[in-house]
Amino acid sequence: MIIPAEAISAEALEGLIEEFVTRDGTDYGFEETSLVQRVAQIKRKLKSKEIVILFNEATEDVNLVQYEKLYEK
Image (cartoon, rainbow, N blue to C red; front, side):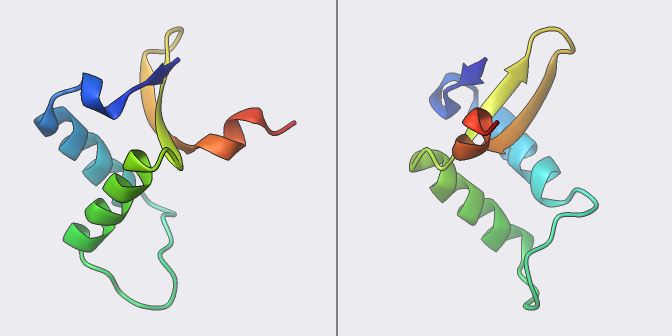
């Protein structure tokens, strides 16, 4: 289920984004970017709907996913 970013509190959204951008395996290329920059980038992508918040009801997991990846076969 896709959850609109506006449907969760600012604190929860910030925590979700920070957890996402600091995960092992998250690659931002050759240039080092700050946590603030990475969070801002994800917020822009959420606003443009390039990334969505996905909630799995069965596992109660929440993740950030590229919208286009939801419909790939």
